[in-house]
Length: 337
Image (cartoon, rainbow, N blue to C red):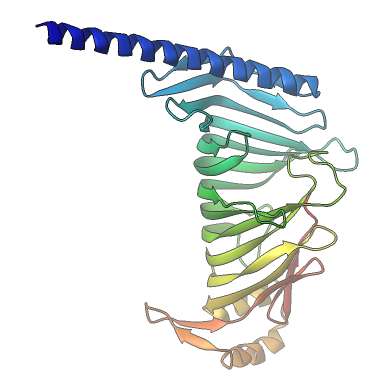
């Protein structure tokens, strides 16, 4: 009996101690949020949200913020329905940030203009795991019903987007890298692109690595959160279905001196004759040369896919703001903000 009473007393003491630790850690989380908000506002940011409500006892601490809003002194701003900051009880310093509901990111135009670029979604759930210094370690997300607008003009919209990424250790040369996967479905590009591809991108699946580094002598965040950085995307696998285009590609895309996408993708194409017919319809290829081009395509390296369809190798090159499929210029790209 005495041992039973001792065990009960010990369990009660441990429970009280753990409860005290949890509530102390919860107050530490609230204090950290207040200190972070105060520091950002001292830097000229505007930060608004409801008073954080912390729950999750006993396994975790979850600070719930309603209607979060952040505006930078240089003009970009973000607002959402809900943000949750979660800390593991037994792993201090390990945090994850989850954004839920409607999201909107707004960026000012360059050159002092009044136009804004805006990304918004009807519903989202984005989770980012943070290191103790606040830098992202990994993340995953789902975005539904998203749209990108330039001022009052909608540029594109999509049915769904999913992604995940994992931050790799920083290299000795200061470069940081993240492995990622991303998928887009039913993207309406009709306001940007018409023939020959049509306005609806059916699917895009992408796997690769994003590499970034600071540009020497430039300040971060002058206008957007990524100001002061350069980078490239090393694409391990890209599968694009955009009628009549159906291709699988790999390669690397970076930025040139004018911050325009530049690089090369080795692409294996299906249904190339159908694509040429579309280029003729769009006026990008003259009809009298379409037949010789189709004949030349039969000389390209070929392989047979698992489903029995023939694929031909024809590179996609981005150079000097122009986009080439093989020797044919099919479009142009502009500088990034």
